[in-house]
Length: 64
Picture 1: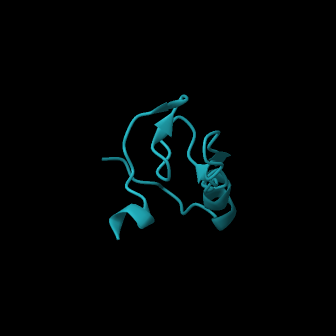
Picture 2: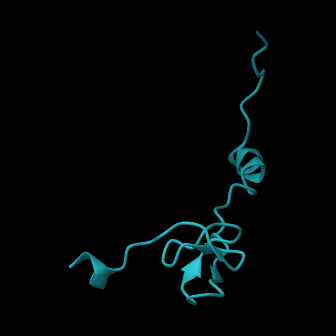
């Protein structure tokens, strides 16, 4: 297995790592309940996706 002949400088290693950034996730408002959610996902608050109720979410008042 080949090994480097000379040590790489700090600048060279740091240049290679300039693209390692975290990006914040895109968050959109649910068109039904206006809560924040990830795009192209079922809303965790109301259970709607593309204008239709996909999953039933039990409300706080209904549990009691």
